[in-house]
Image 1 (cartoon, helix red, strand yellow):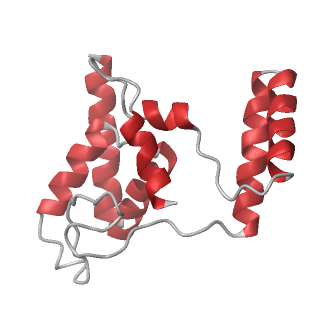
Image 2: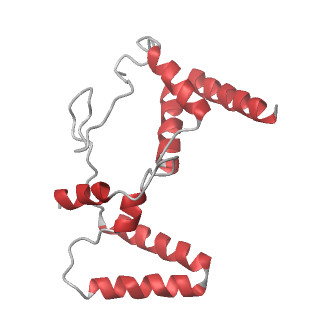
Image 3: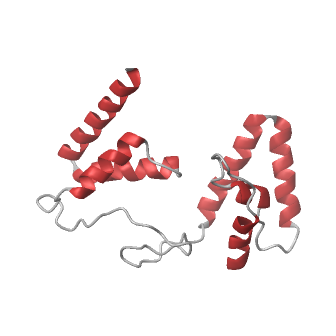
Length: 160
């Protein structure tokens, strides 16, 4: 019952934001996507799908939005745009590095020191890329029958 009430409250809040500011609603959905990275909450996904199905012309004539598949090469299946991520700028790279080091240190001082030492070791070599094979091989394999996938490791290596 609490979960249903929480989902209803979330949907009501999103509906109020959409009514007050369509751009604010879209920004909140994009912010949630950015923060959660992997997936929207079920309530947000239902709301987004329902809103994309509605006619937005009266308040957002320039909107054209839909769910789309993205190819393995990062191309949108609807409009054909290249959605591949660009390189990090130096400030983004520095924030990412500090965030990773802080997360490792939060697990314990030895974790932070080990990650820092590994980073220094890698930086002294001529590597352009480092692929963490175990994490790549197990990505999206957390389901019954999921397993270590050498094919998944090969995909980024083929691109490099």
